[in-house]
Image 1: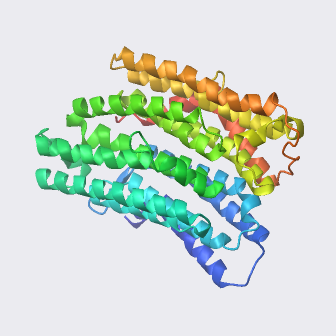
Image 2: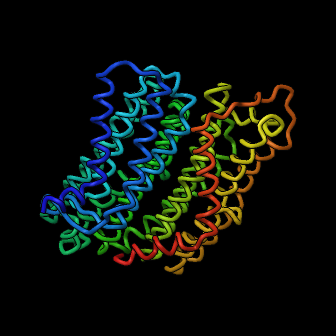
Image 3: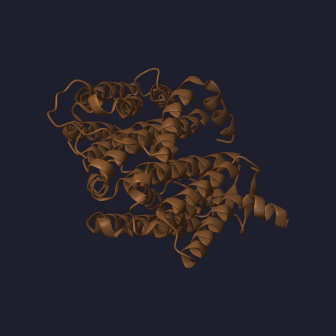
Length: 462
């Protein structure tokens, strides 16, 4: 029994152990940032590697916590993203005054995400969600962005909590596995469900709940921006799929229509606003909004293929977005430039970084043979299972629109002239390793069909 407890809570316990270890290091003798980053990156790699062993089904705490091999995979995708973000942020963190505090906050949010993903109870989900959000705002370098994040997060959390209270009032239970038997689609339950959808919409930056995203992304340090864009969003999407497919399956016709509207608005508006951005972080913010629209399309499939396509695309999104943010992070830390116009003639001085960001943008755009093409293909095919070909056609046309603004950046890098291009950058070994992993991931996850097949096999319960 005790062994099962430790196995089921393995990933949470490992992260907790790292947090306590960092606290002990903080209380000990002073160490250089380079030494601290070496230790922390090793710990994060071990955290990621530990996720590949001892995955099993089980529940704890009266169904408040549950896990299975699919949930373990989802958490390990987040572990991989955290490790890559840490590697990429080396240039910024080596001059940072509060390296350990940064990681304590980051790992605290990760722990909250783990409990959120494993939640079998709406109350546990809410507590995990709050734990995964509040520490992100504790950044002095970006107080305005932090305030916007706090306000938007508080508003979305209040909607979620109000929706949860109404769900409990109309069903008499907060346990997700018991909800389907008590849902009758009466008006109060539908209203409560809309509140829940709205709360999720804020967290994943779907239109019209996206207004905070670009300002927060621009104001936060690149490491925090990439974390918000990839890890935070991925965790909420994992939970969103599970909640819709399992707890609210009796309301499938209602949430399908809601997803139809949200997806089209998110894809179209995300693309239109991305067209006119010059700040790279704002550009990637609206790009990520458009990507969420495609994910909502895949979720609408309400099938095993829908779940598999969403998880597969998020894995691809981790590699693609972090490859782009890795280059932006390096340029921002060394050269202090974040505008797309600053990247004109970037290829003349930094050919390697130019190819990395180009491959990443091609993957985000869905250009074959990058993994992003296959990811969007599976999302569209999952959505096509419902036969809504108007939706599929609009999504496909918007992929063409996205080619324009992604290629606009590639054109600036390779073809535009610049009297003062960004100087040649020295790439730290940690950052170089992260970029190699991201580019390899973009290629391998697209060409190796076994990746999708493995994810699909884990989704057999949906």
